[in-house]
Length: 101
Image 1 (cartoon, rainbow, N blue to C red):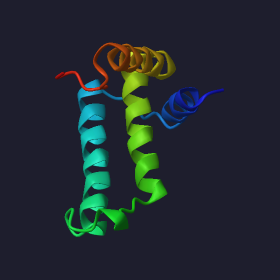
Image 2 (tube, rainbow, N blue to C red):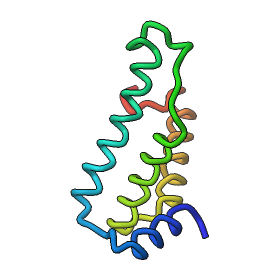
Image 3 (cartoon, rainbow, N blue to C red):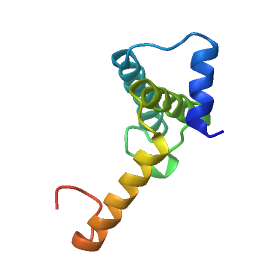
Image 4 (cartoon, rainbow, N blue to C red):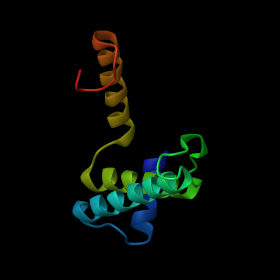
């Protein structure tokens, strides 16, 4: 069983399936909490070497993303593989993973 399967089973077991719009809001909120921790731990970027994020905050964001993938029927592992391949192609052709080059 992989992480997405674990999340899907948890959602089903606790009757937590919901509309993807709500999952998206939850994901946005969780990523915002990660950003808040980074901002606060670095004095809003003044001290990047002090960057710190609590593991449970990253876990919450990951849970929210995997729950969204589950709700919309996307295999998270396959989506990640596609993204990695895309970034690999970009590095080979442009030298950057960014899409703006």
